[in-house]
Image (cartoon, rainbow, N blue to C red; front, side, top):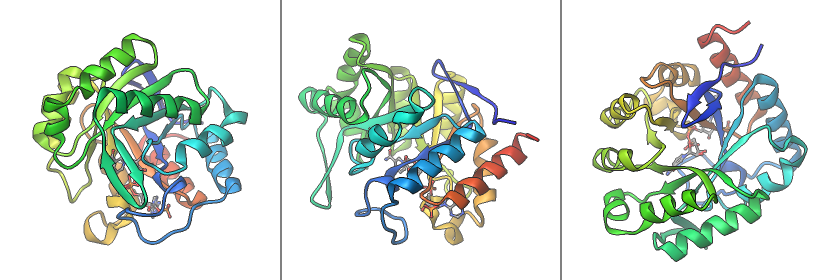
Length: 260
Ligand code: NAP
């Protein structure tokens, strides 16, 4: 049996989605050392996900070659996944920089459309830096994203916030919010609760503390089950390049949602 589907900003999504930063980039991340997965592994991950009823992939313009690889490797599975991406952060020569100008966001969206080989982006999330209020209040990024939605370039818009103030500020302007949460890091709980009250789509990032579980999360099962139980039926995005980890996370989700 498949995982359930929940309402998420007008889409019906599985409670578990796949984060794909490790599909495209190895530098500048908090994860333990790894090498990029080969194409066969990514196809295997996509097949395992589909079989379980997972229908969301989360990527970003700043995830190296992640969008390009998804655009190529998803072709046999076209239309079966929502592909959520982000703009605002640019990762070049091993370093991040941010461009929240209208021209910068539009150029990023055009590149994402081309790399992902789609005509419309399902969800465009603003990829904020640590001072998210700066981009949210003092740049035209939110306005530009609303214009892109009106123009039909993107179906939904969201913000990946980095502060509680930023998350709360962004909520009225967006369809969804992405926040970091795990059992050892619950600072963004007020954003989560407000988002649930406003019936916004909620995405959880770092539910496994980017794999550094001994520090905060104890086990993947514990991190995942805790995140599934949060208010607002969140979409929990877990990054992985390991088919066995994906199978384990699916088993945890099936156990939590009492499938099978
Ligand atoms: P995460 O999902 O908490 O952790 C991913 C790490 O956990 C990977 O290194 C993965 O290693 C490991 N893992 C996964 N399943 C496991 C299992 N069953 N047992 C043991 N280890 C397991 O953190 P994240 O990758 O930082 O975040 C998830 C996604 O959220 C990202 O991919 C991205 O899509 C999004 N995100 C967005 C932002 C932003 O917008 N600023 C920031 C961070 C993350 P293996 O690959 O070996 O499985």
